Amino acid sequence: MWRTALLLTIGLLLGVQAVQAQDGGQFCVQTFEDRNANGIRDPGEPPFTRGITADLADANGVIVASKLLDDSPTATSGFICFQYLTNGNYTVTVRSAEHEATTATSETRAITPTSIEVFEYGAQRLVIAPEVIAPSQTQSEVDARILFQRIFFAGLGAGIVIFAMVVSGAIIGYVFFWRKLARTPQAITDTGTYPVTGTGTHPQVPIPDDDSQWRKPE
Image 1 (tube, helix red, strand yellow):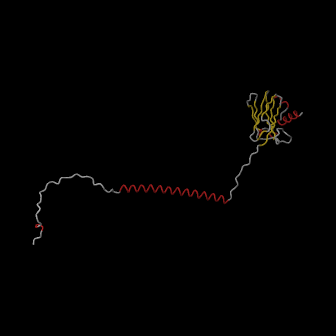
Image 2 (cartoon, rainbow, N blue to C red):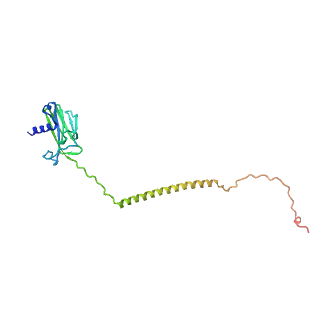
Image 3 (cartoon, helix red, strand yellow):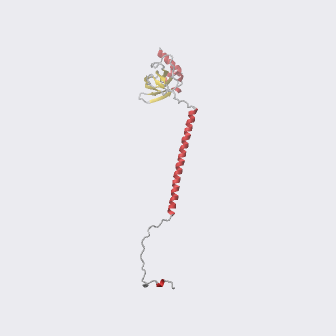
């Protein structure tokens, strides 16, 4: 009885007429928010309407279709349906980055042209940890931090300027000192050696016995 009611409900949701069942079978995923995490769709548990994807694979494991719950025409009821399926075994796999599954995430069913298979997928919403925001600073703390930064960068700049001046002065002083040193004449401390030249020969001057020739006449 419940299976007949479920099939009729799905048929109404999809707008499928009884005669269209001949065009192929259907494999549907019914999503629900498993609030008590018991893996069973209990009365009052609402369907999901977004954030879920279903992939349909054939008997060879090849994915033949994928659908988003967001784009499903029956998203308000939490259904994702694959229609017009030929005979064979199909596997539906459900995945979501926004939910944590509390039931199986895949199911394999045999589909016939007249069958409507439903796989119930339950999950809970992932709880995102709130962003931790650092406490705001007081105005005095902000002013102190700005003052410290100014002093630091001012001192760093002054140090760079002083260093540049010292290096420049050293270079300039070295250049001028070197030029002055190069221009200063060097004192000659070594007389060296010179050749002895001949003085020739000269007649000997006679030396008198007394100094009469040097006396003043009386």
